[in-house]
Length: 113
Image (cartoon, rainbow, N blue to C red; front, side):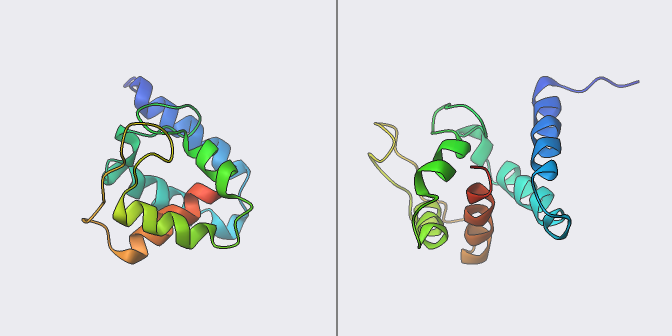
């Protein structure tokens, strides 16, 4: 049996926990959004549950959960980058993402609260 790396095991655990909290209709979207976050290197600076270079995605979701425009706000932060919201480390613009991809990531992050 091939052993999983710690990162792969952690991602699988997070995915399993997230799938338990999501409706069956949304199950297909969660793996796609997580895969997109991993593919576009979001997880190089962010973790779902704890601060790393950037804030934990759970904390981002909690902070913006009450905003009516949270998904749109986060989509623009993902695309345009940000400075000073979560500390001294800036989040670079993600110009490689399409607006639809950024919207997918923003919606996914908001499910993590």
